[in-house]
Image (cartoon, rainbow, N blue to C red):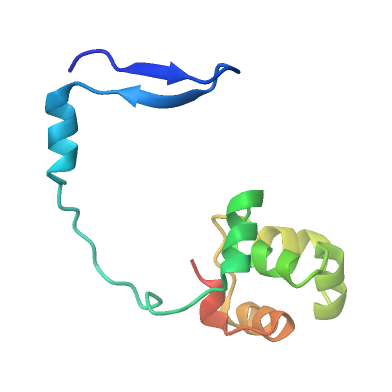
Length: 119
């Protein structure tokens, strides 16, 4: 593959890319690789756009996005659920999988279904 050239705007930000014709034709003809995918149990679950926006814009987990969307601090959630701010922070870790009871409590507080808290 040959070197790709960029066209920059006046401030130096890349705006366009110059591709070799063969690469352009390949992309235009939609020769995409097939990717294997198996449906998950929550695939049909809907999450409000505003919650997803918080998640993306602030680079937080889905559970943290719900909290922010509902206007709570971690301290508020801890106080309402009778736990510590540290525990709330752990639940909101991207790799965390809170227990069902915890998800139930969070869902009730955030006025959503617990399935909407699972990524």
